Amino acid sequence: MKKIAIAGSTGYLGKFLVEHLIESKTEGIALARNTKKLAAFNSENLQKVKAEFTQPESLNGLLNGVDTVISTVGITRQKDGLTYMDVDYQANKNLLTEARNAGVRKFIYVSVLNGQNMRQLKICDAKERFVDELKNSGIEYTIIRPSGFFSDMKDFLDMAKGGRVYLFGNGNKKLNPIHGADLAKVCFSAINTTDKEIEVGGPEILSHNEIAEMALRASGKKIKIVHLPDFLQKASIGFVRTFFSQKTYGPIEFFLTALDFDMVAPQFGTHKLNDFFSVSVQ
Ligand SMILES: NC(=O)c1ccc[n+]([C@@H]2O[C@H](COP(=O)([O-])OP(=O)(O)OC[C@H]3O[C@@H](n4cnc5c(N)ncnc54)[C@H](OP(=O)(O)O)[C@@H]3O)[C@@H](O)[C@H]2O)c1
Image (cartoon, rainbow, N blue to C red; front, side, top):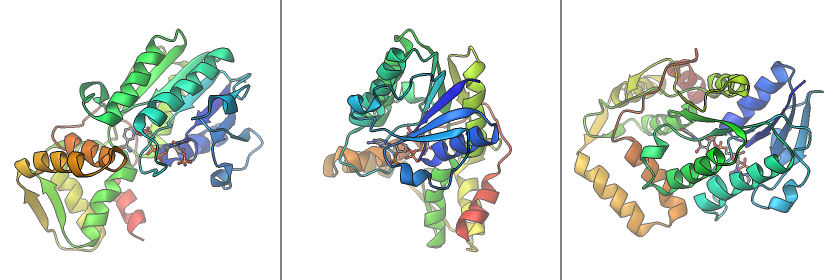
């Protein structure tokens, strides 16, 4: 049976990948810098292995016998003092080098929808530099380009709990965020596809206003949405770039930029955002 290695196994998407691996009885390895975070996962078909992706020598031999690597390694909310180039680019490159040394057949990498069009952002630049490496590596590959994750929609919920959601512009821009369990299915189906890039989002296409309303309702609050003028969004990007370090401004910069256009990808999955919000507020 094909052996699958999951890098980024302790993250939001990574945990759904590990769950999917166990449920599908696929033989696999969950690689993590802190394997204690995987304590909830126990199965005969799962090996948990410590790996420091930023230290290439720690990866020696770990991928022997592996058919496919799925990597979700990247900085989202980590505060390790590392840059996107250190992690999203270099750590994945270290993994790719080891994959090639070990004779791994395929490498599946989770980037971001429209990342190739937002290379002015540090986070997208680092990811897309890795995508370029992957494309030129000679290994079989699939790049998954998801729209927002359900986990990121919690930002709406956090504002809603305070009784008010702030949006830039008229709030009519749309996205179709995807649940980790649905996205895990897409990643696993990519093991045997010849598709080089897969854009994917969740089943519901929602405007920012609709997500804000959903979050307020789930929090038991009245509908209060404050629309901030567009110029404040541009000013905010400039402000965070000037006054915060890259580590702090990166996620804010990405969020503010992505708000500026529709982030809609082909629809997939069954999980509804409203159900996610209802569970998350409990
Ligand atoms: N969130 C979105 O809306 C969205 C949309 C599209 C694409 N993406 C991308 O999809 C990927 C997965 O997202 P996610 O929400 O699952 O992210 P996440 O929860 O932050 O998981 C990221 C994984 O990378 C690992 N990692 C981060 N820094 C590391 C380091 N210095 N050394 C070793 N491991 C490190 C984390 O390990 P630890 O648990 O040890 O920190 C974790 O396993 C990310 O690259 C993200 O940018 C996200």
